[in-house]
Length: 429
Image 1 (cartoon, rainbow, N blue to C red):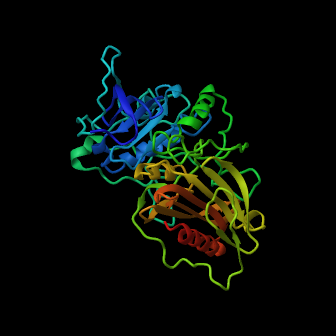
Image 2: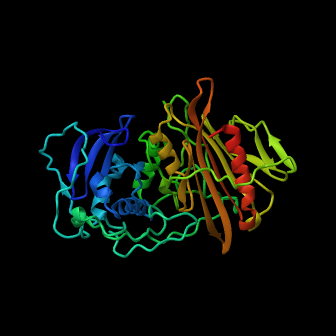
Image 3: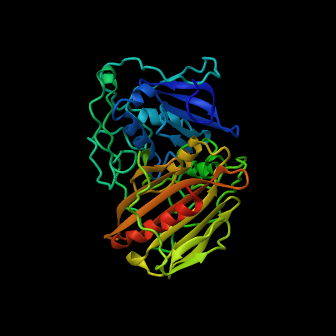
């Protein structure tokens, strides 16, 4: 059975009790290595979280092992690394603390894709090995504390929750509890002229590896259809080109996120109690925002300033004129989703968005949102992220993504919610 992800698997690189490392080609014909967690192991409490948390931890630090895409919510979760990163898939499996066995070079490559099946029993719980790359986090060793969030937490980002006891049939695969490294609280995207949430070039690293990955990821990033990572940098050039035909990748962030949203989204609905704009509100209609394609209503005193633009992509900074912790507003992003804009594409594009470690809530067939109280310079602020997909053009196909990521003083949260409700009513997601 072909696993999730748009890859053509060429040959097996190595095996472990919990998964395999494969060589594969993406849709652009570029070589990647893919770490695939066995589907049965992924169903064991704690393993999916440990797999995702370890991948995210390896992507941080001065010698980051950055992946181009991943899908932690798939039946068999996977992470893809560019060939320039070296044996990325092997490093991830070793960092889980399990024994890894490379496939001898004499074994003939095969084009057969990996098949997720029941793992072979091993004796005892997996333990860390000496094969973890220098400078990268070792396998998790501490119990997983629970991170308080507005919605039920899930340990893909932030401090993960302690896994329950595994099923007896998979007892040999009880995961090593994962302890995510401390991550500084994300700053308000409007609190400083130097933006931290922006599709921009990655920060300069001391190693040549990161430079090579940054050059490759601009053209590879979304061609593999799952999680990319997000963070800011000191520079803010125009993003890569996107195309509504799906022949070129949409402009997505290219660097690690501080706290992506917790996947997969929990079932839910759009909150009916959220306020909406009324005729009594002092509003202004911005009907000429280039690249947006629909009128945008904002409260009086707000303005929207173009921050970045490319073919099939535009980002505006919208908000009031206040500064610091009194600022209300954030980002409005519209970008193409390659046609057909499948659920896999939608999940992948959502997963690259910064969400302060909050749990995604499914609010419709094509939309999700996340809310979180965040700390900015010692002050509490309300954060809201909405990621949705909608139809545009004569064909009436779902082919566009809209992202709202804004913060406000906690008492002003209603401003963010009614703006999000307006956008939902306008584009109908």
